[in-house]
Length: 226
Image 1 (tube, rainbow, N blue to C red):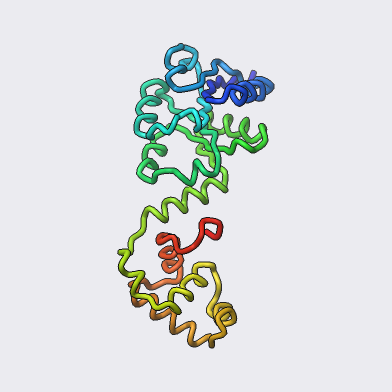
Image 2: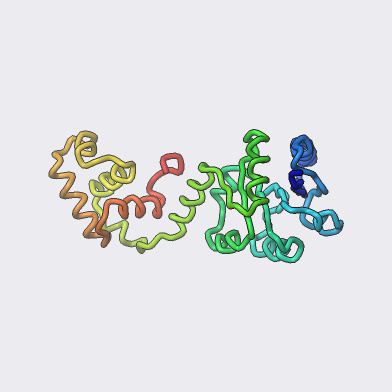
């Protein structure tokens, strides 16, 4: 007989919590052992101690810092198998300083609220088996946050670029080749190549990929383009 995975749900919005409970209860290999509106409410009961996986709506954290959340989860759930349920915005606002704490969880999942119930159930099963699960959309946004955070070029170096060089840099960051940039700016390909070389020299980088990283780190592209 397949072992039943026991799940505790924390959701600030009651209809969401009840909907999650119904979806999980329909799966023969999953069982809901408790439902709370906050970590504090969860801790006041004993049901969470039976849980294999905690499904945690990010909204229920009430903007608590990850250090506090991690300390609480470490105390209450030694296994630390957690599925975070959130939005793309939640992923974009991840503080890179908290990444080591997330990685300290025994198993971790992050799924979008708007996705199908089947994806959540699959994530719960994978996290219960000790896997790390994250949707690609969220991985991209988290990486963007990390890139911004890890800006490595002093701000005053932006001013070293001429208007034309900044323009060329933006097209490089959008992934265009020298030939494509030349067509966009009505320049010769050799002129564009010269601009790119000058930009690299001024910024102290050696590869085109580092120029893209620079543009992202400085917020020179709108988030939608990133």
